[in-house]
Length: 329
Image 1 (cartoon, rainbow, N blue to C red):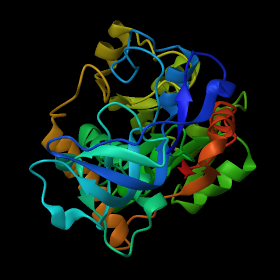
Image 2 (cartoon, helix red, strand yellow):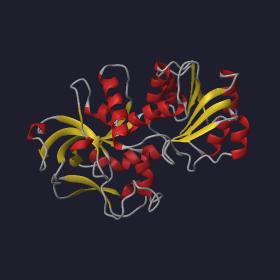
Image 3 (cartoon, rainbow, N blue to C red):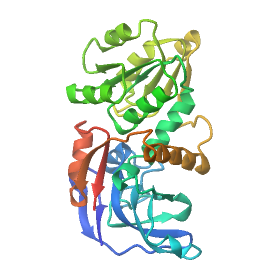
Image 4 (cartoon, helix red, strand yellow):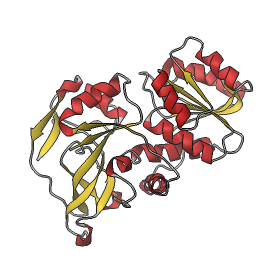
């Protein structure tokens, strides 16, 4: 079968398509004919070598096929797995990559059966991103009366968070993005105000949109942007870190945090609340169900052929994408 293989860390061009052996389902596993594979931003960081040896999502050694999010049809099952699964549409996350391929292995405990109302690309866009969006709402305790500032609001998580926060009763939503097309999408997905964070006066624009300050910041960018967003919080607000696309995690002054009564949480470490497998599956299932029922709209912004994985990584790294980017074998 064909798969994308990374043989050395570096630029997106290091992602090359190769013929590799067919995967075989072990006990408790299934092999899926992949209809869509999701690309996570963190995979671009792994591919570059930036997370080598410091993150559990990075491989222990190369060569390696990236990709954890897949959707497709079960082709075969391993020992102890019900054969009735063969032919069923499913989605799930692999244990350690392998998703950028024509076939991939999933643990049966990681499977979500897909309703006909939900396409494979849409399902893939709701696995890691859907559970993250649900987790952010729970971690921040977003509800009635909140004014929420969402960074990277035109991204796959951001567009979901805007919808979920509105459904939870948030009073005002402000989304940060870059460029008019992304700002248009932010407004389309429910933001009351869309602000370009590359503008020198962007914090002042947020202050005009929320003169009493924001009660929640969802920080996906980090660095200077995260620090500026922190300063926009009203006393007693909540600051939740879930990414560092700007290159570094937001480093907050503990004295300022304490003085203003800010609650700081991090989605990815140290964990805020229970992040066990059952909780993660429940969060992804909630997102998938909401989408299938028409209560949540995932944004699949880009679809690339499997052989063009390098182009997909290039686009993501250049901030030239919106929503979720998927590969189609």
